[in-house]
Length: 299
Image (cartoon, rainbow, N blue to C red):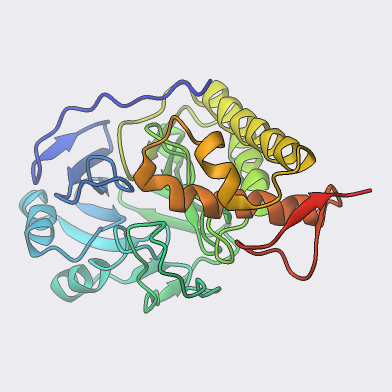
């Protein structure tokens, strides 16, 4: 089982010093996809980076600016991905501070659907400086951040490693309170599993997700996260072998312990597994795999 970490103490709009180099301000946008809300991180002293400014809430913008000490300035705005609980405030924050926006532009447009699987998408997100592919080093006064490409949750997801604390700002790639939604075509299960291994190999001491508290027992947590996905894949494959070839038939059974409001998103994650299983030749379907396709065992 995943050793979830969900205990977090905070006040909306307040600035908490959570490590020697990291401050956090949480936006008032709680919900089934955001937990207690978006945690915006301020890194450094004097010259600071802001990670995931969050939703376009004027009160949150003012809270971020109020968290700055006299004489401090924002030199970098870093965005993990383009969902509406992460990136929309980047523009207003840039307008107030003059800091450039770093991230990866939207690459794959989500298909039209009446099913809500996330907090929404900021499809117009377009950073000033592209970090697609990862590996770029961003430096400020007393801090060094490396961009780490982690596609899977979205095609443009970037995590940010803080060298001085061997910490990773993991966005929605790894969260302590919940598993991550994988919604094709922008989300990709094959990419996601590879990205998990990439993070694990780095040996970080702590993960700071955008939602919820930090993850401090990193390697066991990532291993449990990956094992959960593999177990879910095995359940999906078994369901197909048992003759349940429709995703809509599987979700209420496979996700019986999950908030029903998240079942539509869960169906998209099952589709992510199906696409991966079709790629690997374990499941077949007529035509391209889709949410309404009929699946059957290969062979």
